[in-house]
Image (tube, rainbow, N blue to C red; front, top):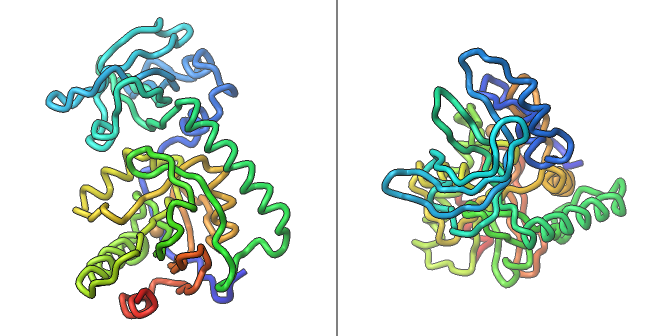
Length: 305
Ligand SMILES: [Cu+2]
């Protein structure tokens, strides 16, 4: 493990979504909708159901998504209906795309959260990559942590628009990588890291440095869906022309964190984590790493030229 990895901050209250919702999205087979319904009572709070369905179209004026969903046993037959969704999810929506999500019913209104692509091609690609990464972690054993000078791991994840992104897409370019989560409540941790990435991105453009991609990997994939990441980037006016926010199955993310020396612990409804910022070269090799929050443009810009 890297020397001086510091578990810091991010230890205060963040609004925590129930863990079981996301587990149900990824492991839909393990909890039936009927089981879910049994767990809901009639009090005045939102009811949630994992669903699968297909997007018919996005109505961007009325901010609703028309979705044909499969039957929810004991609750609702298969039907086509409108859902309120976030701006990011609305922008990401593509007609005919298969999705899985959590349907929320509250006071007669229906919305969708935790929307993930669920088409066979995407699911297969993510599954295969997750297995390969887990195998790689197992094979590396005690040498799981990749030091500066070693290659960064292969991965296949989803970006803020729900597109499949593999590590190889960045070959031939340098990659600035950090790890954040959108609900991080500690100003000096993830929010500061995001702002520094943005400053560095601007500095590269001002300096005429090209061939650099910025990659922010979510520490909280249960919550940080592509749409949530899109909202996060848009709310901060970030330049996504060469900046990807990545998320995916937690089983894959865990392997990536282990290999990149990222410690993440769920604690008291939020996430404790260390901060690491890395530069990866054109051949996928880790060439620089700064642990902690004390880094700036000058630590990385000269190494990008
Ligand atoms: Cu944080």
